[in-house]
Length: 378
Image (cartoon, rainbow, N blue to C red; front, top):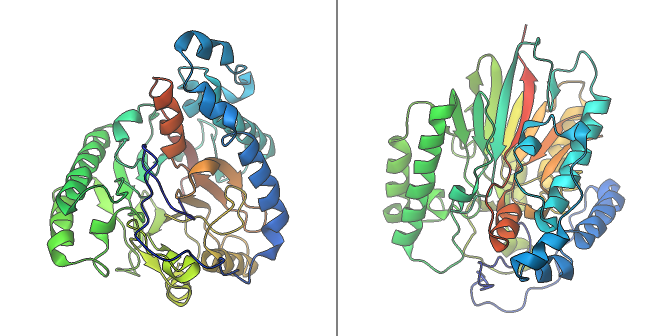
């Protein structure tokens, strides 16, 4: 998660011993998004976070069936991830219904000449991307992974809530990378970045004795699996069939904003550092991969203000300068797809954690990778 103390399944806080945090420092940007953020926060509180969801998950199966949600709209069922939903329990279906509304809205506003969409026409030369994020070592629960050309994972492969030692964390990474390698057999290519829980990949903050084994594992991945880290390699723009991708794991430093250090502090950088790093995002990208969302976007109520500022500046310089698609996770509760009205970018938050948690409580598996299409350059 992007703010506050993260907890594991038992509710244990992952924050280290520290004095109570001071009031969060207000970022002096993106006031324009405050009304949208307030509305979205109310939706989140009224759906995923209400007591009825939590209490319903503890009811016996006979009572759970009485809480089945209404079916998803037919107009959204052509979207492969929603067609793969195999249950109708109300807890996670609330999130799927929100996704269905987003998919229908995007389809209705998609122009015939669109280069990006949730589903471009079959006749149009395109690449289908499949996106997951924030699997937190629960990758085996992510079984609803539609077919596509490229799989993207935008970080938090491991859990790391302070319960395990370095060897346990490296073992989690080994399992997660093994799942990526196995899943890569279904795809032409896989691209992934780290998240704030993936501490063994942050060479700057953690010792070589912890990070070296992790990078040895990455080095043993199949040739069609590529790890991206633009902080370490600012010029690392990769191409897939003519489409450009750029991935950066950097997130907001909670030590700076909250005065507290968390176990899951990988790639947490100060505001000044993030400004310098994000200013290096290239123009005219087809896909930008980050772990954090931009602050104030339509799919999250938290995020990085420096990232949002830079993307807005890019959009102001002309059409097509900002990325066509921005893939991220980190903010678990706002899973979905929207088009950013200021930048024109399709924003895809594929964080799986909340779906996994809800579905585990009712004894089902699946979660939901997200898909989208990008037209090939002519």
